[in-house]
Length: 281
Image (cartoon, rainbow, N blue to C red; front, side):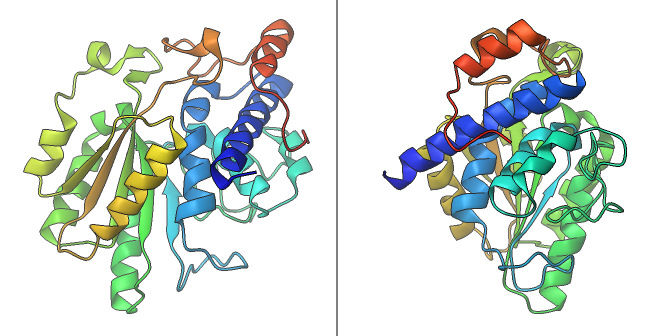
C-alpha cells in the first residue's frame, strides 16, 4: 500500500470516528470536522516534527494549536489514531468526566492538547506567544495554528495578525479553514471579509493558497512549501479551501451541519460512504 493510499484510508476512518462520536451523544460539530479531516491527517502524519512522548512544554518539536475548538472531533480522532491516547477513549466524547470535552480543555490532561480552545479569536495570540518563546529559547522548530474563516470576524485576530508581522514572527504558520460557512449561513452573508489573501498580504504576511483543501497530496505539498517560507522575516498564512461536511454527500454544500448530529438513519448512510479501514473504536 502506498503512503498516500494509507493516508486516504486513514482519512476515511477519521470521518467514521467523527460521525460516530457526535451521533453517540447527539451533540457536536461534524461539518467543519469532516471538512478538515485531510488537513489533520496530513499535518500529524506527514508534516509536524514531533517528539516521541507528549510534553506540555513542547521543547524541540513543532507545536499545533486549534483555535476553532468546536471541531474537536477531528482533532481527537487524529490524535488517538496517532497514538496519543487509546482509540477506544473516543467513545467518551462529550460525556461526563471525559477527557474529550466538546471544546478541548487542559485540566483533564489529555495528551496532545496544550490550550483550552473554543472561545473563538484567541488561538493566533497563543501561537504567537509560543513562537516568541521558541525564538527566546533558540528552539528552531515551528508553531502552527488553525482558525476558522468565520472566526476571523473577531477583532482580536487582527491585532495579533498585525503584531506577528510587525515583530517578524517568522516561525509561525497560520492555517485558515476557508470553507465559506459558519453557524448562521455563509460567511459572505453573515459578515463579508473580502479577499483574505489581499488582506493578509497587506498586513505583511506571506500567503499561500491551497485551492484543493480536501486533497491530501495538495495539502502535503503546500504545507511543505509553507515550511520553506519560514525564517524569512515574515509570518506565513495558508488559506485552505475546504468543503464543510466533505465526504458525506448530504452534509456538503450547506452550513446546516455546522453543529447538528446525524440521526440513526443518517449515520448509516454517512458511514456507507466511508468504509471502515482501520477499525472502529
